[in-house]
Image (cartoon, rainbow, N blue to C red; front, side, top):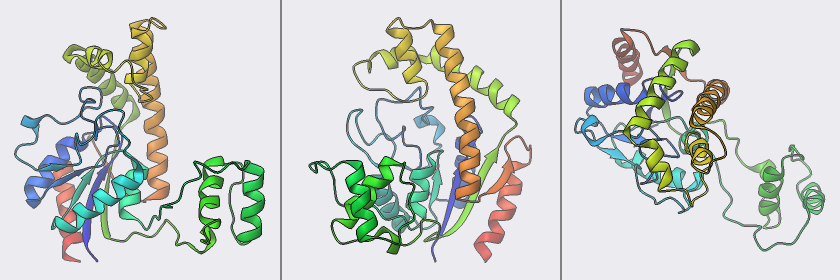
Length: 281
């Protein structure tokens, strides 16, 4: 089974720095695992790595789409898996849990659509229960109901699909855990730095687009005169902290990574020690 390494964790935990150090040590390339950084125009607000920060390390799936273009988790799965096969020891880095898990685990996406089907959710549920009686589903989750319905009307049964909890590669998953008080200080400082570098101006150029992304969303509200800049900044920090908490729970429950203290002065040495053991197995 092919070996794959991934670095995950909240924004501001030091994933980029560690990824460059590990990529140099392993002489490998990096696959972006952040769903926002795939867009060319989202640079400052997504904390996208700068060219000079890459230190010559090749990066993939960065700035490959324009804002407004569709790029789904299915697209990422396909692109990431193609790269994994080409790179000898792939290193995926990012915080978009579902994207990363979809690439590394046996997720299957339906090729079907319900776009032109005029059927109520209740009718969908009735059809699913009739044609796939063994399916255990959260019937209140409309997205999952639609997904199951797409399969069942084409003769596929979700109950017979593989579970999503089995990796298809030999994984070494690194989670950078960071004290919440330190993380908050880092996020406050980093947001001020982003604003100095032109985060507000970057958001202004995208104001016509739907920007349901932490940071861009709040600054758009500020630019539209709905809130003050201080209110926008406060919302960004609060939302980022809340998201970081959910991220940690999700990754621990869904992918069971090895937890590392992001503030450990010997972090690189500790990770390399464990990585050597993984590579020798």
